[in-house]
Length: 359
Image (cartoon, rainbow, N blue to C red):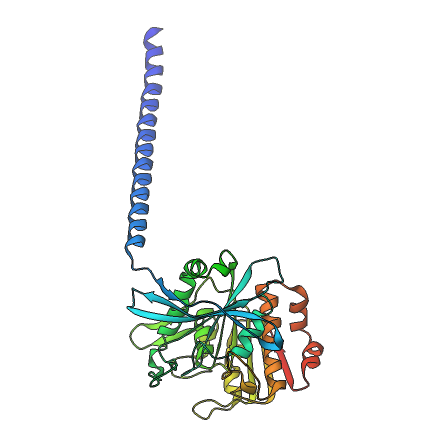
């Protein structure tokens, strides 16, 4: 009886030992894998720490402005970021409400100027938004008009540097808050919109997901996932950089505003500027066409910071109110604003010159 019992038990012991070996090998493999992951994580952190980081190198004292509609706002007119990776300095202007009427943090709007514009333009829009509880950051791109001296290059070929400028600003939001005590812990880093006019609208489109043709790298994207919504004032349509499917990758909320006299630089009529709306992915897309409005929209691009005024108050007012509705709907989660955006009657109440399309 002993012999047969041994024969029965031995195979079981053999199978058990083999299973133990397999288990030990699996545990050892898991330990090695976890060790490699930890080492890789440490190396990645060290690599991030070794990368040149942007930093604030100078900041002016805040100034009080009368604001649009006599609503007071404050502005830091010059904050300089040093982009060590690209070896350049980026000049910013930060505007925010003097009196915060909402207990919540301030949503952020980064606004990109048109070709040859500057961070000090568009005050009819910026101060209007900021008086209604937004913080707005404007920046000088490579083609900006300096306060004094000769105009910088107005060549359009360096378009790819512009979305990189905006992403650098988003990288630096914590440093900006630290540099401006009045904004300490007041910026909402989870609610960020990007807007722009003309060449700046092109920049906003890129950050929103539009792709472009690069002669060296092919089709490229500058989508920044931190951006929740984009506002396009007089954007570009199809051309050398863009094919009809370039806008299919814009899936976040987007408002486009143009006018029936808003012609393109190469003689295109205003319908060319409808491409971003018509060719983008459906869902939370809005198009406003203002009858008889031209590229200047009543004086919005060029307006004094101290005394912003409109050449055409009706047209400028349309842009102010429509854009504010859009930001309120998608940066503040205002349900009433979102419903008003979809209602033709509400847009008609602003002006009979407004034509609305949605998808």
